[in-house]
Structure formats: structure tokens, C-alpha cells
Amino acid sequence: MAVARLWRHIPARYNLIGTECQICGGLYFPPRTTCPTCRRDGKIIERKFKGTGEVVTYTIIYSASSTFRRQTPYVLAIIRLDEGPQLTGQIVCNPDEAEIGMKVRPIFRKLGEDGSSGIIYYGTKFTPLREASK
Amino acid sequence: MIGITSYGAYIPRYRIKVEEIARVWGDDPEHIKKGLLIHEKSVPDLDEDAATIAVEAARSAIGRCNIDPKEIGAVYVGSESHPYAVKPTATIVAEAIEATPDLTAADFEFACKAGTAAIQACMGEVSMGMIKYGMAIGADVSQGAPGDALEYTAAAGGAAYIIGKKNLIAEIEDTSSFTTDTPDFWRREGESYPMHGGRFTGEPAYFKHIMSATKSLMKKVGTKPGDYDYVVFHQPNGKFPLRMAKMLGFVEEQIRPGLVVSKLGNTYAGSSLIGLAAVLDQAKPGSRILMTSFGSGAGSDAFSMTVTDGIEETRGKVPTVAELLKNPKYIDYALYAKHKGKIVV
Image (cartoon, rainbow over all chains, first blue to last red; front, top):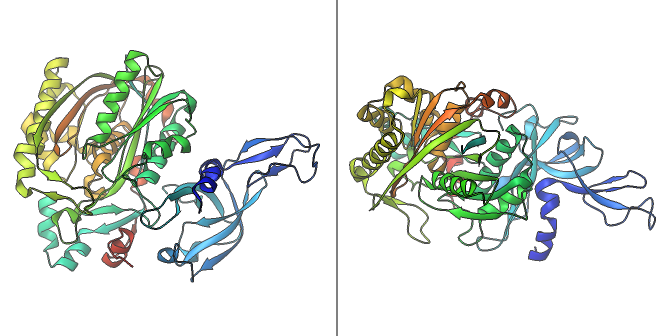
């Protein structure tokens, strides 16, 4: 990934900073620069999401690209944040623990890296809420 | 008065038992357990490193108190396993706790005492009035070469401390350090694993430095071992801190509460700081604590502290060290080797 693109993603990836339209109250993650409802009349501001939410659906990845091959099998899920927006994220748990409706909370992990000499990407993954010690 | 405003610890979920490492290398596990007083050690997940551990510890410290991260004027991360050779871990932590951009940040390196050196730097800046709060972190995913004695102890974990003048949970009365050029343990640039001087790491390194720093601190503060409720020393194994305590005139009841190494292993820059966190988790207002770190190379930083009434308000907000040590996931040596990147694919 280009360094500039990675850098632009840091607030969203580290701290789930998305956006909110002050006109219609729409909440967006990943952040949007314009409100799809209010269009040019919208007023977009930053909005931080808590990171707790529930699993809408999930899949277990067995065959991954080279960056993620060491982590297979892993759980990739669509998570509905408590505030409403949905996002795709990795759930750190045994694949047989994953279930639809499971409550999750955010954790800070390595998302990937550009080989052994390139940039390391950090950001948010999720873990079952019941695992208080993780 | 300067002191600790908040603290937080983080320990990865995975563990490997001494028996499993001994099975692979043909060692006698009972001999190792008796010699090191270690039963198991923590292992990082595949996507954890010193930066992610530092962030989790830092967020725990923020979660325990009510201070705005923007009031933190310095973030210092001590580690000997910083993910980048050039690109500070402290910048990642500062961003992840939203303390950026009006602050200073740097990475510290002094083997296992880099985190306590960072605490001293924060103390200096807070007392000068340069910053309101400073965050000092010790975090490591420690390295030990396959088959080396270090492999039984080199673990993963970290702890973060917010140093300030306000909202204190413990006042730091004073600190003393003792530093010499003693090559007991080292890792050369570009090398994957450290080397050490075997038995040389004991008397002229660990014992001499901790003893000197601790004695000089007690002389400065005017205390004796009996004045403290708790004592914490760097924990490379279970045996060294117990022997150190005895040599200095402390009793086992003073050192046991902070001795977490037998279920955790040696978390290097996190070691004495996680031990202190375990003590703060259970200390009462008025409790006196003495902590002395040790970093190979070599040096020790000693701190004399008294817990304040403020500690009671911080309970139950984030996991304690005892809670972080609960519900481990045990893995075998093959998975451990994969987690630690010892299998190159």
C-alpha cells in the first residue's frame, strides 16, 4: 500500500474515527467527505465510534493472500457498531467461537505489513466481549 | 509531589509451559522449574508486537483515570523489541491514545529497564513544569534463541504509567540509579537473538546493580527494608528476585505479591513494571512500595513510593494483572515457533 494512503487511514484504523452529518444525523464509517443523503447541503464533522458492536455475519478464511497466510484460519466479519455503522473487520478468536449476534469489542493489532522491510499497518480488530482479559 | 496518576498492564493470552519447551530440547522440566521457579510464559499472538502491547497497556492506563489524553505532554516507550529500527513506537502509541500532536515522544532502550528510565524522564519533565503529565511504557515481545536457556523465560507483555503532580494514586518520594558498563547480555544490530554471559548475568550484573541502587535509595529517603509493605525487583526468573530480597533484608511476604514471573515469564522492559502493577492492584492507601528495575548492560533504577487514597477510585475500571493472567490459551512448541516467527516461510 502506498505510504500516503496508509497515513490517511490512521485515524480511522487506530481509533475508529468516522464522520457524522450534522444536518441529517447520518453516521458513517469509513469516513465520508460528503453526506449521501444531504449531498451539498450536508455538514460533515468527525465522529469517533466506541468500537463495541455485534457480529452481523462472518466467514472463516482458510485460503488467504500471502500477507495473511500465517493467520489462517481466521474470522472475517461484518460488525454493526453500537452507534449504527457497519464495517468489515477481523475477529480474534477461535473460528468455532464465532457466531452471529456475538458482542465484540475493539483491540489494537497489526493488520499487515509490506514485507520484512516495508511499512507495518496497525489498527483495530475485534474480540468477543466476554473475553474480558483479552 | 510527583507520582503515579494511573497505570495499566497488558499480557497476551497465549502461554507455553516449561514441560513443552523441555520436551523439544531434551531438558528435564523439573530441573528447569526448580532452577528458574517458572512454570509457563506468555506468548504474543501472530499479530501482536511491542507496539500493539504498548498501545493496549497505554489505553488501559487511560481507561483507569479521568485525564484527557491531550494533557499528556510526553510519551516514552522502553523496549528491546521495537518493531522498527527507525520509526518510533512512541508515535504509534501517542496516535492510538489520541495524545497527538502537541507532545514530545521518543523510544527508550536500556534492555529490561528502559521503561523505568522513561518514568524518570517523565518525573524530570513534570517537576520542571515542562509537561503536565508524561506516559512511560515498558513493553516487549522478548527474544530467546531456540534451545537457549532464555527460551524458558523470554515472554511478552507490558505496562504503562502516567506520571504527574495531580490525581495521584501513589507519590514517588525519590529515585536512585546505579549504572556501569557491564556486558552481561547484548544483541548486536541486525541479529535476531540476544547473547548473554551465562552465570555472569548474576553476581556482577543483576545482584550488584539492584543492590547498589536500592541501598542508595533507602539511604537517600532514610528508610530501611522493614518500612516497606511491598518490594518489587526485576523478574528474569523466580529465583533472582527472591534471593535479592533476602540479601537486602526483605522478607518473602514483601516480595510475593508482586512476583508474577512464574505464570508470566520475563517480559523484559515490562517485567518490573507489571510486578509493580500487580502490587498497585492490591495495595491500600498508605502502603509503601519499593521497586528496583534492572537492565542488562547494566543499570538499575530504584523508586520509593507511598500509595494515596486516590487508588480506591481506580479499582474495577480495567483488568488487573491477576485478571490478565486468567484463562490462558496453551500452545505447543510448533505453534509457539510460528507465533514467534521462528519458522521462516
